[in-house]
Amino acid sequence: MTGATTGGERPILITGRDGQLGFELVRALATVAPVIATTRASLDLADAAQIRDVVARLRPRLIINAAAYTAVDRAEAEEGIAFAINARAPGVLAEEAARLNVPLIHYSTDYVFDGSGLADASGGGQRPYRESDPTAPIGIYGRSKRAGEEAVLAAGGAALIFRTAWLYGERGRNFLLTMLRLAAERDEVRVVDDQVGCPTWARLVAEATAQIIAATGAAAGGASALGGRQGIYHLACGGATSWHGFAAEIFSAVAAAGRRAPRLTPIPTRDYPTPAARPAYSVLDGAAVRRAFAVEMPDWRIGLALCLEPLLATPAG
Image (tube, rainbow, N blue to C red; front, side, top):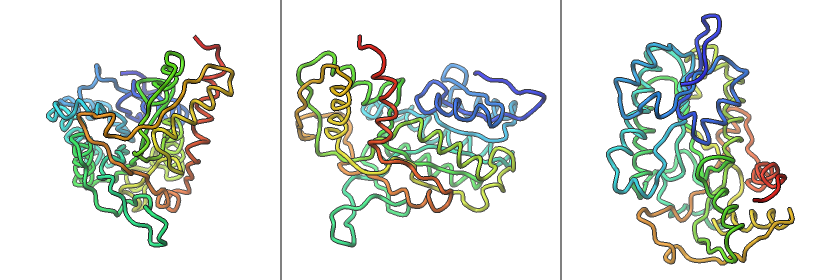
């Protein structure tokens, strides 16, 4: 657990400090209020009693749950721990936030949808998923995250649930860093081209969260600061691409930086079998968060370019 209160101020409590989103949230909110950030070692989210004890002791002004069990394939064999962390823990945090009369911010995923898509009324093919669309997760990970959403809402407090998608960043395990590593190691990389989503830089999610907190006064005004705007919102970059399209954009930037880029070959999902099924289409519609909080997430290509700039500015190897 890192961070400390100053002058008796109540802190913002952030879980998942070592994750790519938690790390960015600590940085984005450091000037807003004192921040206490927990790690897996300092707060076991599978232990409800420990969660309640930590919250009771810190009495935070705002709770942000950025921790999650994100091993999508391993979750198929570890349903118990996936549900403990992704479903029960958010519910406990939400109950404690309601008890303290403070807001809770929780993050969910595009994997709550089955990926079959919904027809665009204009006849232009599939349209991005809206918050009101029915959920139907197709794997343990998605089901555990949907159960977490339901547990947070059932607690009855002032909660914001932000669904994001295809998260990546400069740390941890993610698609971007994997592609950069493979670019340096291989002559050819084969990537699935029939799964479509919206790649989202974790820093942009953290900065948007900080903007929403500032606009609502959620870190200062108690649960009433949300002004009836609690609920589920989609918070992901704009546009859409396949994993293959995402990789192509990465390798294009790699080549433009004078580095070696491999040959990229598209493959269907059936040629890359995994224990857990993935949604074939999980693009998220960001209109609701724009209306409610005046937050505009950029196109995914802009976010990727911003993230890649410092990574490609340093010498390779």
